[in-house]
Every structure is written in C-alpha cells, then in structure tokens.
Length: 157
Image (cartoon, rainbow, N blue to C red; front, side):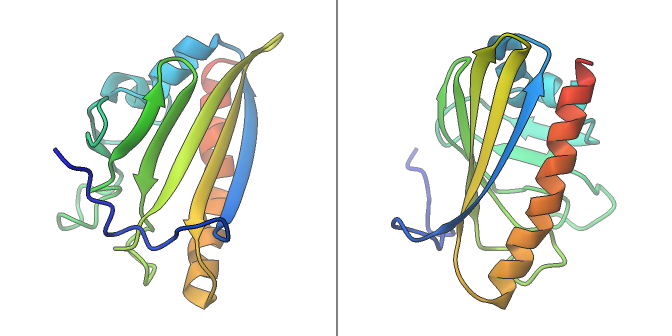
C-alpha cells in the first residue's frame, strides 16, 4: 500500500512547528506502547473509540465524538508515518471539525528518551503554513497537546 500524502500541504524546511515535552514516570517502551495501540490509547487518553494499526500507512484514528457524522468524529484518515519501537512514533494529524483546514493534514513526531525520572516525551507537531487559518490550527493544538501530555504524565503519577 502506498501512503497517500496528498492531504499534507506543508513541505520543506520553512514549515512552522509546535514543540511540547513531558516527563512520564514509566520506561520508554511502556510509554511508546501507550501511544501505538488501541489498548494503550484507551488506558490514558480514554477516547470512546480508536483505530490504530502499527504499520507504515496504518490508521492512527482517534474518535472523540461518536455522535457526529463519519469524518467529523476525530482523526479519521490519519496514518502512521514512521516508528522505531520504544523510541519514535510519527503520524499524520488533522484539525478539529470546527476549523477551516479540517481536511489538510499536518504531522506529529513523538520521541521517547529514558531519563532518571522515567521517560522524556517530546512531541513535535509540524507542517503548519502561514496565514490566519493556519494560525488557528496551530493555536488550537498549542493548548490541546499540553492537555494531552498532561493526561499521559498523570496516568503514571
């Protein structure tokens, strides 16, 4: 299966990025597994439904609003881009349904590094371009990823 990247607008070195970090009191492999499986995501994020297949091009879909029509429930259509077990996980990501760039994907790369307190998780959400709609997209996730990483860290606290 060829990975379709036609929905990703950003390219080259001049895309904008968000960087978030959190320390999690668990070993890297456990924290990595918490991101890369349906059971893992359910254990700390708790969405009503997810569809994650750990393979390049596999779905990385987290459904937050099952009452909404298909396509507006969450990260439908997002795909796994790359992974290194216990170290790296990357996937495409979309904007929430209320934003104009809903059908334009960005991408997220997570790294997991062992530290004395457990694991340093570094989240880089990138592929943002310039303009007011992109500013809204980026601004939404500036807050949302802080919340999500807080959930992750609290799971092991």
